[in-house]
Amino acid sequence: MHAFANKEFNKTTYKLVTGSSMYAYVSHYFFIIMIAVLIIRPYKITFLPALFLNIFLTNAIILLSYIFFVFIYELIIPPKSEKEASTPGDEAEREGLLKGEEVNVGDKQRS
Image 1 (spheres, one colour):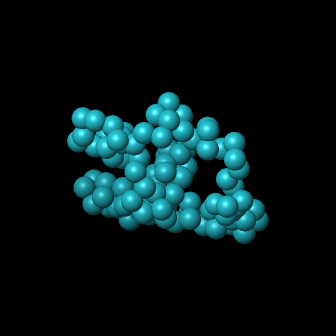
Image 2: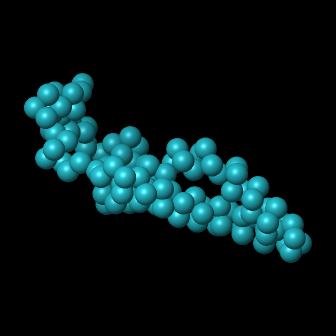
């Protein structure tokens, strides 16, 4: 699972999902309470519709607010390009324990 789940299929989606996970962990309870207090209770929505509404709105608000915060952050501090970010010493640190070996899912041998 580690070799499969950490593979970058789409760079933008990978950055969004991995970056927003900690933000979602920290902020989700605030958004759940705000939706319950501002939408569900005043309109007296029953349990099952309220559950789906809360789940979908919480996830949507988390993603939209995270995208907004990243946009503002990148306006203030522009991201470095890959050429600027890589230095000769970084390659040795990235190799880690595998030292250039690639782990393939489903293969018994390392190539």
